[in-house]
Image 1 (cartoon, rainbow, N blue to C red):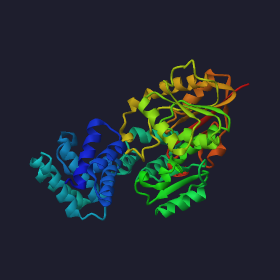
Image 2: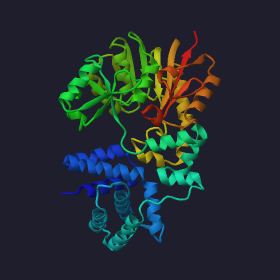
Image 3: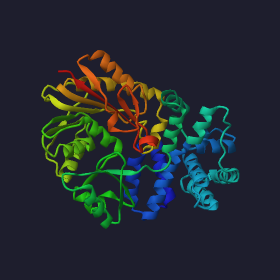
Image 4: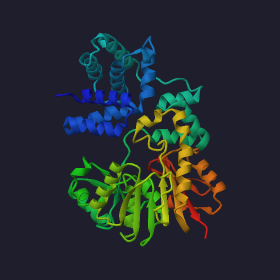
Length: 439
């Protein structure tokens, strides 16, 4: 049977090799491994920890190696990173175990030649402890301390100020809360808290978000009777606030153009008291199946799914009272959930605003006179957010921006738009703008 460290080793290699999302890869390997609860927790801590601290770890390793890290075989580098993370950030693991288990990993994975190197480097890391560069170059210092690329730190400092940039980076360490939305079609928040307590789960109210709960000690969501009974769905507070900004009413027609996996559509349906019509769209059929499955579990029957490309006009789509386009984005606001996102190339992100703008302008064509249009991203990047909205307003005089600052008290606001920052709102990083079509 494979050890927890071997499984973490394989997961990290797969994420690096395939550029896959950490959460999906981790779910897959843990499902296949069938480990104990304690070993599951160790694998998760190692994988997410190494990804979150890669630049910090690599800085420590570089101080002990004569050759560049890129010259190492990928398996050796992964073992060294795992060992270094345990030495520098996991106090409960003995140094000898961190070193010896990493040596075992290189031996068992075709790199026995590097056993001596691994042993010597990790012992040196253990001796020196966590070392950071001089603060004279503050961006480089932040990059090593918080493990973010320098281009991204500069972006956040220039866009939101140094204090907010540091706050965002600090909020990305450790696991984020598990936030859920009460299904008000079936229960109340108070009753759900009681049901969850019967299963040994602690549920805490979320400030400033109605019917939102943070769950603690819940284990696998799918094993909870309240989940299988459709009493809640998993949804971060930022997405719940986005649905609140849409302000859908009973009897409305709502289009959710980039809907999968459907959380915002579910919340809107609950706010609409399951009365009206929601068309949930996605370009992938298998993702539409997830929406159907979720709606059935929650007892929602006003959601129709439709396969379509949100950037192209669909002739048979009805005019709607409310249109939501939560567009594809860089994901720079959800780094705490997918730590590998921080290592995206800046050039990869620069081409996104063009697609985002095309989706927004297409979405506008479906809005009734007097109707509301929401543009949102899980990005903390003005080029994907405020600049797209400013261009839309310049080129679409039949729309005006709506002040939605009251939806998220205390959030960062700019020209009536809302930017949710993890260290301020305790949600994912998120951007929301609302437009109304003039009568």
